[in-house]
Image 1 (tube, rainbow, N blue to C red):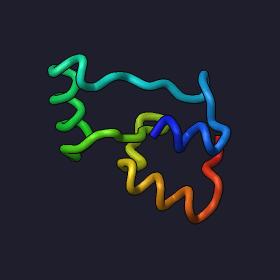
Image 2: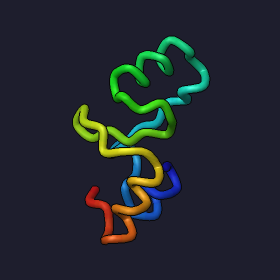
Image 3: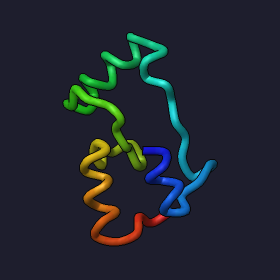
Image 4: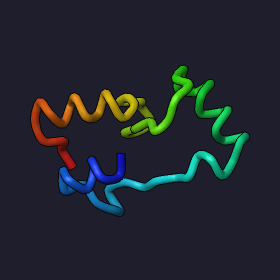
Length: 66
């Protein structure tokens, strides 16, 4: 996901990453919050855009807006 964001010239501080594997409570909570059991997940302004496959498909349609 980070590579995809960088390839669309979306760089920090425009986005931030968190190692979901480092905190089981956060990982389980995010699964409940998003309704999706897999990671990575991309949120923009608190809304889930999708997982890696979804974001790749969006990127193939055109550049992701920073």
